[in-house]
Length: 122
Image (cartoon, rainbow, N blue to C red):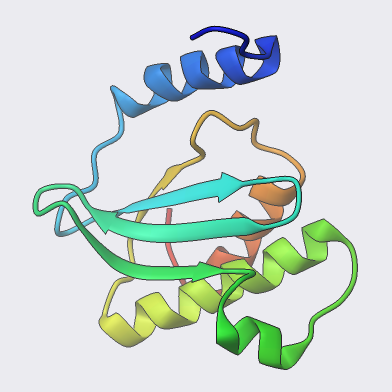
């Protein structure tokens, strides 16, 4: 891996540990969350077909048009509600949360709370 930070190595180890137990089926797809220092991304994935069903991020045109400002956790909550609404439009109500090796607090927790408030069950 070369010159990789210990934080990244730890996250990737957690990611492996989590992903060996989580699998998104057609009945219950996987809600995958990734956060960078500036943006947050969420996808609902059907692992049996290998297809992304719904996605939302801070780079979406719909999100940028609303011009949501505030703390990163508040922005993550709006992304969670956005992906929840899009999922309900596609008929998806139950998902499995894949936090991608990130700890469940801060922006990840805010996103999942927003998705739950929008109507997703996990």
